[in-house]
Length: 128
Image (cartoon, rainbow, N blue to C red; front, side, top):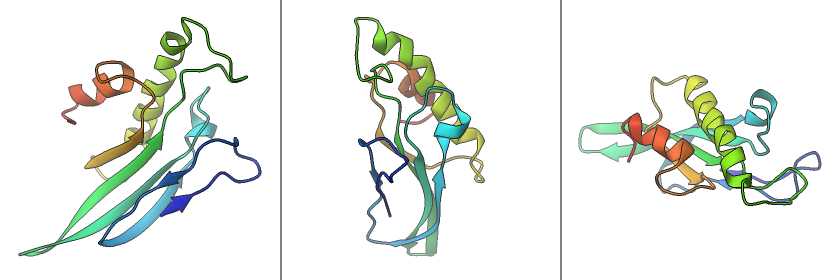
């Protein structure tokens, strides 16, 4: 599953989910239209993993959350702190818009450290 920036997208970005197993229900989640300050979409899909009992469906999302820079590309000492709430809103939107009760795997570029913003929020929800 690949999403490359189009003519109306920012030049940077792009998302991919690679799987050895069947991928279904591929959806481009346009976080940009829903979260003020967001600059990249997300990709959500189901991966059908074979098991001894048949198959298990994993609900997977790949994100590229708001980089810690201003929209003009500049960055100041407080830019990471000022853009952190945007990343949290992006993750909350993604989880709230999910058809499944919970995404099993959320991967990608979170653009922050291990204990800040969106990652801290996801850890509080039980993600590791």
